[in-house]
Length: 308
Ligand code: RRO
Image (cartoon, rainbow, N blue to C red; front, side):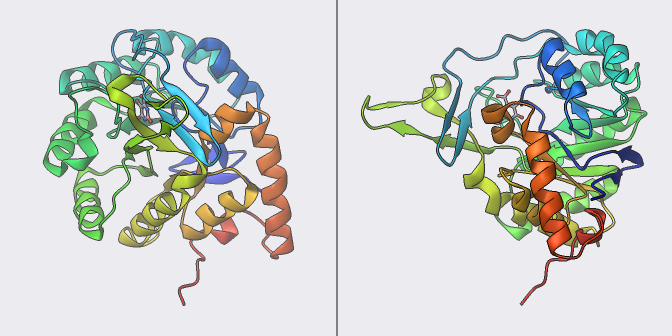
């Protein structure tokens, strides 16, 4: 089955890849993605300098999903820039996720990584886990101002990683802002921010930072992810490349993202649970579903969701 796709001008041998944040912080993790059957290597969101992140425990997986409050641990943009030539040797696109705690930090990280020309830059507008810092993607004005400045710095195709939206009004306003900003792709969704998972036996939260509040991922968030993929697919008339993220545990989940309009699909919680072998399993399961349904490629099913 042909699972290759064209995404924002970049050819991917497979429509599957890691979600930013999942097993992509260190050189070893990034090289493992290079060797695995992922269609691209996506880096952890990078800031200008190394960050150790929030205190442990900061990640917890449970039946149905995960909660995290990592707090942007990363090696720093200069270290990822230095790694890029080695990552290129795997012969697949590299997508650099860029973040910051201020506009100046976003610009500095973007400048450092753009200098070595990753294939795509994904601007993270949606980290939920920095104490005292709201998710930029929930503030249209702030997002507009930030993207306007990043456009001057990022000379490779630049997309955005958005938080989940729960009302069409917010999707409409965000799409209008992104149109004006001229982004090359939209990645939806980041984790569902500020959830709380409780261990009733120990009578405590399962992670330490922010009193236990953290971003939810995995199977439980799939309907929210699909709704956002579909909403942005429609708002852009099917012409905006969309990276679907959220709740991808099986090949059927990938297929559902495709039906809703995703051109390619990212895997977070399931990758953390299973390791890089997850891509092979998802490929096999997706291939079987597409064949059974009479599709000749993943691209053939894109956006084909029937509305009753
Ligand atoms: O590092 C994190 O805590 C984190 C980030 Br930057 C993000 O974008 N999404 C998430 O769930 N965790």
